[in-house]
Length: 261
Ligand SMILES: Nc1ncnc2c1ncn2[C@@H]1O[C@H](COP(=O)(O)OP(=O)(O)OP(=O)(O)O)[C@@H](O)[C@H]1O
Ligand SMILES: [Mg+2]
Image (cartoon, rainbow, N blue to C red; front, side, top):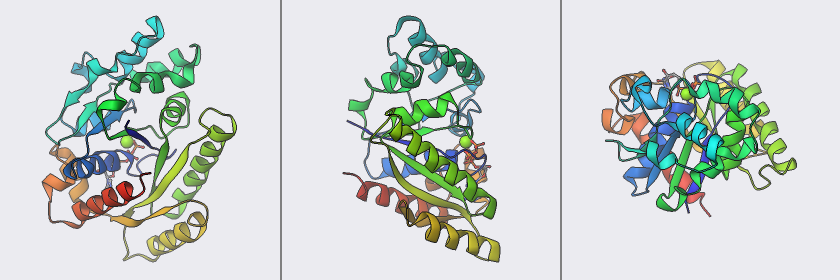
């Protein structure tokens, strides 16, 4: 059965999609069978993998829609092979509609969990890319997952969102929605060691959060190679194989595998 990891934090632009994609590619390089699930209506993961969300017949949204009408999980229709060695469940902007549709649905928090259940035996790791907003879609990801990876942009103002995310994990546990949910780790992203403010943010994250949850030893530095690789629909491993970014996500993949039970 796959380990299911939600990549989540309620702040925009912290590296959730970049981490989902490149961690997925690095895990696949290590021989893991990886499924990436785009669960963000922005569809950035879908686009970074070279698909146009508007053209897609089957997406995470259409699977939700079908499930809410007949309660049958049919997410496999949406699964695609990609050149990055990972499989993808793409999405489209219509996933925005699921916010309202799920709000009135029976068992609204459990839809993604039910959709992923038939796919889980086929993969070693499933990574769910989420949106920067704590609503019913993120709650679905946190019910489906066993672990949460929290990307923290190395900036002072970003730490607040990590605190919010950890509170949400506590809520998931206490409410019984997912009593066993774990924080896999906080990942420092977009680190720029040259500036004092960044160094302070890294130090703060390790000291304050590190006493409560794991913080990955791996840090991802800021590099223009990341947006470049996404624009050319490649992972950082393929785009700049010997670069620091590729090294970081390979090291992160090793850490994630070491953290497996
Ligand atoms: N280490 C990095 N160095 C430089 N740029 C980066 C790095 N990681 C990500 N980026 C860029 O920063 C932008 C935001 O990253 P990304 O899309 O991964 O964030 P996100 O958390 O998924 O955003 P959202 O909350 O909108 O979904 C993207 O343009 C991405 O290419
Ligand atoms: Mg994103």
